[in-house]
Image: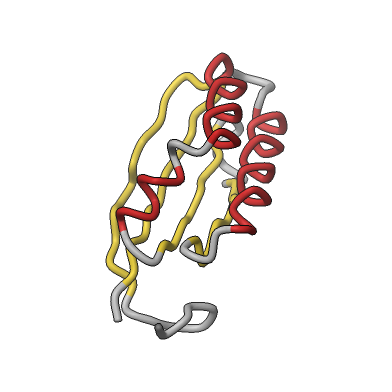
Length: 104
């Protein structure tokens, strides 16, 4: 069993971190209906006032790519774009298992 996982960093305009957190939590909620999305966690660092991190685990890379074309995802992306100043894919990972991951 292997899963497709991403760890991304979003950098936003000063003072916009909470708005970005709200957008990403809304995205996490919209993933609730997708069995292929096993984990979607929104994180912050106390040392980076303009950064928000997202950790995602998907059944496979194709499921993640398909999620990007969903209407709800596209709406969130268009709403978030004006406050994003940068994005960094910290890592693409192959998850092998652990707590919270299905074994199918």
